[in-house]
Length: 245
Image (cartoon, rainbow, N blue to C red; front, side, top):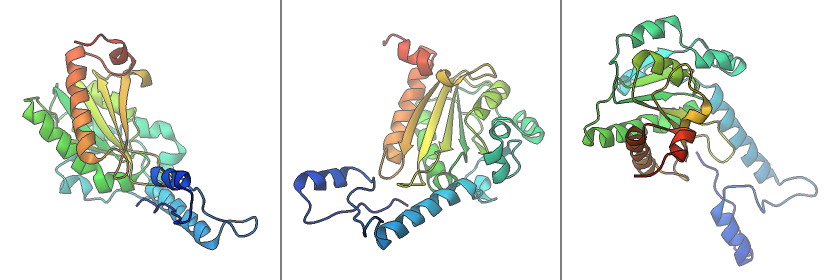
């Protein structure tokens, strides 16, 4: 939930325009050297929402409710996920076995990982994935088994790619929450992921939330990116360097 923007009817026009353009804490007032009680309580509420987004588990029935196959990383709890990032990048043994029963060599693999905001994923992840899927099916692309990765980080994409061998993999992830919103998603798109893939191989679409890049717009951007990646056989730095046409 986004924090309401501060407004002041008596503020100069330039300040009013600035306040309307950003959720940043500007012109919040003060009581001596301290923020006002309202501003301080507002800050504490936003900080609490951010902490909850990181540490709260996505509900157990989430995957089944949205037609996703759930797999897990080696991070067994949120506390372990936060404390040991490497475990969120590698699959649990049971997840590897389950992936081997999923659709192999799809044109596009779609997945959701809770990442650093279970709030964002629970609120918007399935809707974004469904919209992207509809756009891709309309273009007659063969999709893989849709996945939900519990306690997953971005680079788990590479390990999954090494098992399923998709042409393009799009992973929707909960972004690290800030004090403006805890409901922001990112989508990481990579061409032919493998265990040798690196961060520059990915193209990211970020800031996906109600006050940023909206779900309908983000779905179109992601679907177009996937189509372009297939056509040019590249994502990330290689896609940026590839000639158009």
